[in-house]
Length: 511
View 1 (tube, rainbow, N blue to C red):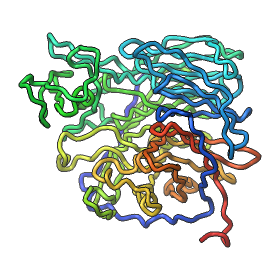
View 2 (view 1 turned 90 degrees about the vertical axis):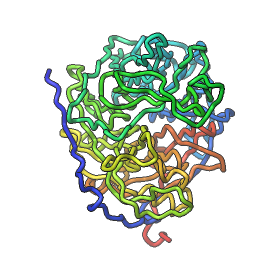
View 3 (view 1 turned 90 degrees about the horizontal axis):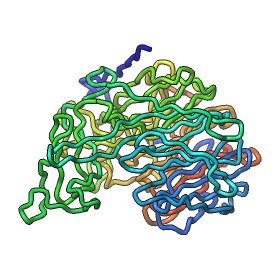
View 4 (view 1 turned 60 degrees about the horizontal axis):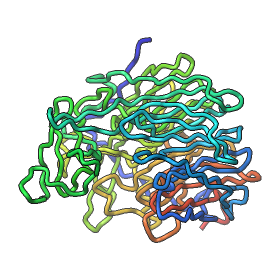
């Protein structure tokens, strides 16, 4: 099947056309109020949370401990743990994602095993007993079910890099997308790993001329340890300087000694399969298509689930708006910005007619100031696209950062980077109107966005995650109890899950 590529052009004179959007009102028809906080007992690691609506249970992953908690969310004001399962991972393995089956007493978990293909496990949600498992692609990072539970999909990010000292070459396994068909009992019937096409120089992708790179943990000296500081040049000193370490696909790879092996800089000069890293997946309600974010490539891969093939790529372009782009002690949303969206989370709305992305950003420039005319990383926005064509309908511009500032949670120290960092997004309807909620990693909060007009998505409310320390909401999910709407956020840097209630405020009660 022929693969099509769809381009979103970035105007050269984008600076002239940016206008400051008005500060969104903190009040509105809907508000987000915190109602409870679940403490896992661990100080970090609570990453992904998924709810089974029919039983009002949730599964919660902890990447730091390799455990899965099963929570009772039927009384949102009092989240209770029903069970905790230790997956008994081997050294070097990491639990990266979980998903509750929509119907059966099962959950799916994916495990990254480093430089070997990862695996999918299907387990009982009552006992934790392993029901079935299968080897998938390299670096599985997320797992989702279709609405009917007959299909599971895994985004195999393949982000691990290796170094060969004799040739001074860096290399990485290719990312892929796994489709897994399940029986009525939840056992694996069939599976397929979908390869991503070589997208070098195709117009659907933006290849930066300004030195974009990905920061990756790499065991450069082969001692089995990722060192925070490294004397790369062997002169006996560790300095704040870049050192040429080797090459990746013909491009120079550098490391900064004071950042060591934790942040080796992999250049993004092409979009070969080794650089296509699937991040998260949204399956259409009819399970005929899926949309997969390729975060570092600012793109979405479209999967035909009938033929089980990647059929197209949508280049997502840049979000253009005013923002606060300087960490200088003042917050002024007056600098023009074009930011490559580079989305993490993705969801579908309006019965699959649109897909919506949380435009976090994940790459960096090799200079403090990107090359003239080059967009920065991260749209700082939530964007709406036509699912059939990939055409951008609208985005939130700078509304998320401005509402975070109005609520005194804006991370000004991140102004010259990626702002509040919208991470994951979930969709639902309120009184027949499509909405999405987005977790803002650096602002420690949740934004509620109305898609009543998909061409002008509007941020209407913000909920603050409790606590004084870093929260970093990663996973987010939605559920209802007796017709009332709730959100859960898995806060990976505090080991907690926050529960919010979405409440309608009548006009005479708004202040």
